[in-house]
Length: 157
Ligand SMILES: CC(C)(COP(=O)(O)OP(=O)(O)OC[C@H]1O[C@@H](n2cnc3c(N)ncnc32)[C@H](O)[C@@H]1OP(=O)(O)O)[C@@H](O)C(=O)NCCC(=O)NCCS
Image 1 (cartoon, rainbow, N blue to C red):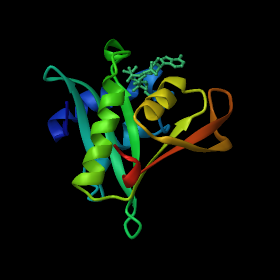
Image 2 (cartoon, rainbow, N blue to C red):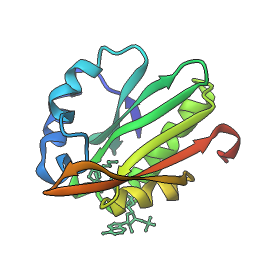
Image 3 (cartoon, rainbow, N blue to C red):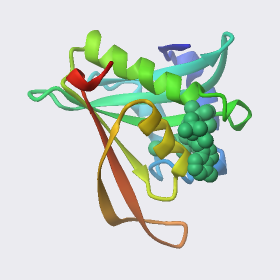
Image 4 (cartoon, rainbow, N blue to C red):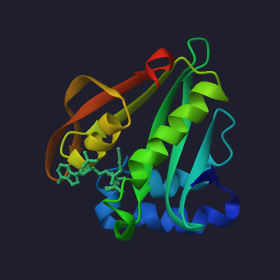
C-alpha cells in the first residue's frame, strides 16, 4: 500500500496537500514546494494506496547523513480514507523501509500540537513522544506548540 511516487502522481498529491483541512496541518508551503522535492536525492515521496487507488501521500527526508537520521513529513490521507488505520499502517511500513532498506538509525516526525489524530498515528506506529516545541508556529490565528516524535532502529519491532 506504499509505493514510490512518480511525476504522474504529482497533481493528485498537490491537490490533496491543498485541501484546507489537510493544509492546516502541514508546513504552510507544502503544496507549492511538493514538485521540487521530487528531485531531492536525499529523500523520497511515496503514495499511499488502498486497493490500487491513490488515497494519500507521505515523504521522508534525510536530515543527518552521518548519524543516519530521517524525518517523516507531509503525511496526508484523503478524508474519505480516514479512520481505518491506513495512516498508521503507512507510517509503520515507511519506518520499516527506512530501517531495513536505508539502514537508518533514527526516524523523526514533528506534529502540530492541535493535531491529535496525527499524534495518535505516530504513537500507534511505535514512535516515542520526545518533547514539545513551545509556541513554535504562528498558525490559525495564534502560536501553536509542536510535538516531536522519534523512533530508533532497535526499538522497531
Ligand atoms: C493524520 C491522518 C493521516 C490520520 O489518518 P487516519 O486514517 O485517520 O489514521 P488512522 O486511522 O491510522 O489513525 C487515526 C487515529 O487518530 C485518532 N483520532 C481521530 N480523530 C481524533 C481526535 N479528534 N482526537 C484524538 N484522536 C483522534 C483515531 O482514534 C485513531 O487513533 P487510534 O488508532 O488510537 O484509535 C489524517 O487524519 C490526515 O490526513 N489528516 C490531515 C493531514 C495531517 O494531519 N497530516 C499529519 C501532519 S504531521
